[in-house]
Image (cartoon, rainbow, N blue to C red):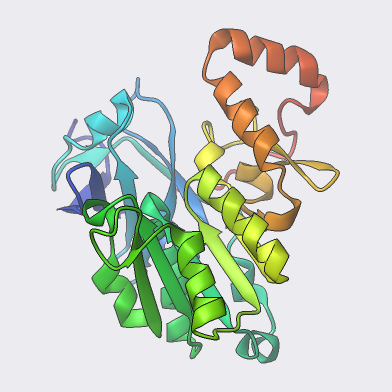
Length: 300
């Protein structure tokens, strides 16, 4: 945690016992980033690269907000950093911005959109909901978690979403059930109609949301940021099949048509990637398609 590093933490907030929000001073990233994109954080010279989706940004202050859960050794170390300390690298913005931003305004104004956020996935949902409100569009949002203790950014989300529905698996807060149960409640019992669902959260959650929305005939976009490791397309971790095409979440996404994502393949592959033996098998099996040749990094 050396003072020679320039990406200073200007704010640190504990959202839960294990989930943290940090504002990091990175003026050029803040000036150029948009909802849907991500950054790569490296704490020091020996630290690993950690891809984190952008939660918010303040172009005037030159800060970017990131949210992370302290699970592995690197994120546990990151959680020990305090305001005034700094990271070695804060690279970005990376990935493609949300397609909502580039959609013709007349077309966007006609869509009834539901955002579905699961756990830490609430962080990348938030800037999209905020952008929609700031540009004059009303959206609904479902925030789901195992229990009340893992619901994050509720108050912030309520400032920008027209309706925010909270659901917990154990019923400790809000609607009792998972996000799919809540979607069914909204559509079947409350008569809500949606043209587009944007779901971000754990892989298994996004898979089952897509199965439901496909039955309902609702176009669905998902963010595949949970499978990113290196963030450049060179490690091969985020290789996935979209329809009949091979894509990489970090350089081609992270957002894709959820109804075209092969979730079962992606989850099985990610599990294999966690071991050295599995990585060797994947490299041999996939050959030249194991990593992306389309690495696009714009460093801060």
